[in-house]
Image (cartoon, rainbow, N blue to C red; front, top):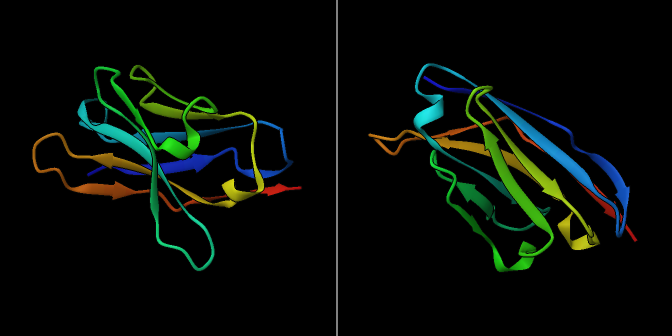
Length: 117
């Protein structure tokens, strides 16, 4: 079982930065790939970025060059550094952890990010 707790959301003006954190509990957390998804009002949830237990990253085209995902396995925490934010980045951001054997996805409760123009 893995529990995820996100923090770091908030409101910022366009061009600003925010850093999201997601703390994972559970003995297997450090073996799991982790990631961030987001869901804007009236839209489907979409992938933002993922990172494997070994540190291999993947990004949505819309955030490449602006967002950076990282993890600290000693702290069982994944981060999303978001720079040059745009109004279209406004969404609820969800942290995920994929079980390294069953590939079951655990989800956090979500944190709101609002970018004003």
